[in-house]
Image (cartoon, rainbow, N blue to C red; front, side):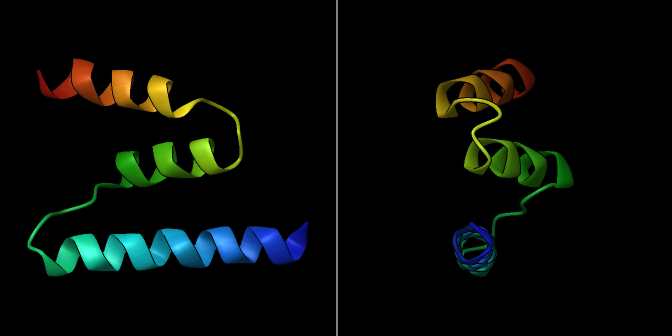
Length: 56
């Protein structure tokens, strides 16, 4: 499981760097949502709902 966690963390960091290279900012709140999705604490739909409520 530790190997998989490291792989997920690396994938998340890569996605964030790629996004930031395009000029977007990834907030700490968004990073925490990503971590929760990756840990199966919340679903992707739940994370998107949180973001939609905040930014609508």
